[in-house]
Image (cartoon, rainbow, N blue to C red):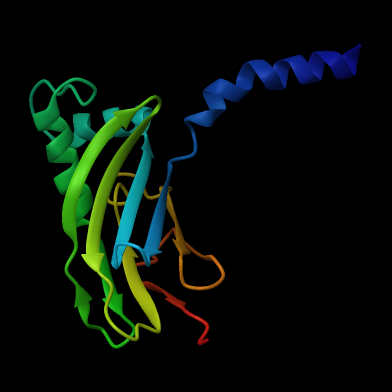
Length: 164
C-alpha cells in the first residue's frame, strides 16, 4: 500500500515538475531533397509565454497574436548561428513560426555548402533569461545523428560528419 501511495504522489507531482526543467529541442536536418539545412526549434509553449513576458513590454499574446509570435521568432534567430568547421557563417533565413499544441516552433534554413565536413553551432535561445536552460540539438542527414547539448557556459559546439 505504501508503494502505491508513493507512485500516486509521483504521478500527481509529475505535471508540475515538467515545467521545472527549462529545455528546448532543435533538429538540424541536412535535407538532400531540398539541398537545404533546415532548423526546427521546439520550445514548450509554457516556457515561451514566460519568456515573452520578460523579453517584451506590454500585453503579449504568443498564442493568438502573429506579431508577438514573429517577435519571439526574431529573438530566437538572434541567438542561433551556424558555421562550417572553418568558421564560414551559414546565412540562416527565417521560414516561419507556429503554435502547435503545447509547443512553439521556429523554422530556419540555409543552402547546404558543398563538401561540408561538419558544423559549428551556437544556440543561446532563452539561456540569457534562465541559466539552467538546456538547448539540445540533433544533427541529422549526414551519417549518424549527432547530439549537441548547450548548457551552462557552452557558446559554440561542433558536430563532425563521417566521410563516405
